[in-house]
Amino acid sequence: MKKLFVLSLALLLNVEMFSQKNNSKQNEYVEKTFALNYLSNERTIMKFGKISDAIWSYAELGMQEFKSSALLASTLEAEGFTVDRGVAGMPTAFVASYGSGKPVIAILGEFDALPMISQKGRVSKQEPLINGAPGHGCGHNEMCTAAAAAAIAVKEAMIKFGLKGTIRVYGSPAEETIISRPYMIKAGLFDDVDMVIDNHSSSDFSTGYGVSGNAIISTFFTFKGKTAHSSGAPWSGRSALDAVEIMNVSTNYLREHLFYTERMHYVITAGGEAPNVVPDKATVWYYVRNSDDKVEEMFERVLNCAKGAALATGTELVEVRTIAAAHQRHSNKGMAELLQRNIEIVGMPAWTDDEKEFAKAVQKELGKEEKGMPIKIEGLEAPKETFVGGGSSDVGDVTLVAPTATLRFPGGIPGGISHHWSNVTANYGSTAWKGLNAGAKVMAASAIDLFMNEDLRNIIIQEFKDYSVKHPYKSFLPEDAKPPVDLNKELMEKWTIELSKFYLEEK
Ligand SMILES: [Zn+2]
Image 1 (spheres, protein in one colour):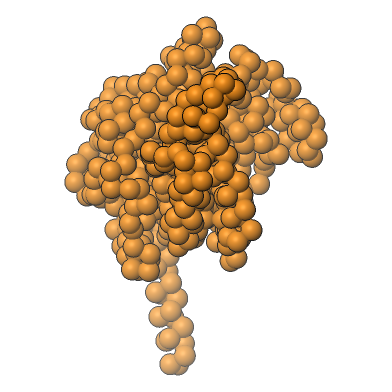
Image 2 (cartoon, rainbow, N blue to C red):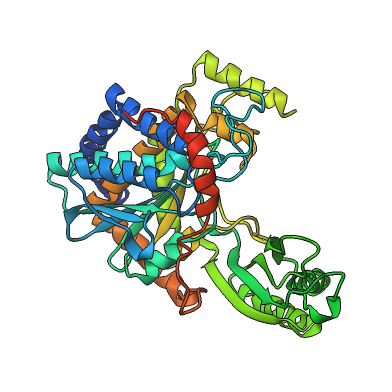
């Protein structure tokens, strides 16, 4: 009898729980369905697809994304968002806000291109649009566009259902050179943010949590020497280029004695103009990468190589200019689980036969398996247990100031290569439109979940607080670091004239 009572109580509770769950699902369903329907509208898909294609055609390099940034900021402004332009000392950075008070949900968005990888859209062989010009080989043309689409859909739901809080888009320049976010944090722009949804275009539809990528310090080392006739009176000169070369020899010897997580690469950005004049100025640009706990110590050793080179060559190390520095990514599990749930609700876009055939043609050209476009959604990615490594992103710093996870949305070709023509060609047109739309849906649905569900927010905040105790945030940027607003200026001035002949309509 007692057993039966317990059983029926359990059943009753279960029914109770089920119906509550069902009710809340029902509520959730209404707000989400509304936002998802808004984004499924043909006109909406076309509007943001065209914005993405237009930014693809502008192909603006980091810190010079004037047209891309303006297009996104004005699109959000026309939808009733308050837009602060030129924030944190960066002319192309902006923050667009809608609503007021807590919670504050931020969506990050990037829009910079990469040098040298110009390519025609939806052509399955390497065919530059303009030989040597920049191109969107990382899909950043789709990313702030998806963020804007998501935020606008959330705004519509906020109006319709009276959701309380603030939705924001962080227009984030120069991700390819890991620049904007640490400066935006330093300017206090994330101080009141509760949760952050980051996004990146991809060839799959996925997310993950835990530590990933590398921390980075990006620094220009400049040496000053003395000019002289290289043949007539070389003894009167002191070559700044020699200092750069000795520094590089030293760092290359250093490699053997660095921890295996270290990555270090450089380019010489100034090294003289003619062999018959001893160069009195030379500059080398280094990326020093490692895990968060080792990167600063590694940087000190590279700096010592520079000091030693100056001493050896009788030149002066006149400037050590760090333009960017970022942490590894520490993605929040609760946020990643939320994104994953919504990825499963939204589902993989349906690809047409033409889209599948195009993907196969690119895969064939690259010598990859000809499997077409992705069908399956991956499970939630757990952190790697041993070596992490790989690239870097300034989103890393954001993950340490607010609970953050990154959504990877589809559209790219499986087997396509990032920062390569095969990626540029796929970031334009129908698959990009569908991919960014699916990404916008997941972000909008996740933001709506966060607005509606305080328990969910509390779980995420608690996880973040516990993690912050173990890994508190301190910027790797020097106190006096300033955003390099002139970065890529000359390059972009050179290419804009040619690129402008191929600009696509934004409407
Ligand atoms: Zn990227």
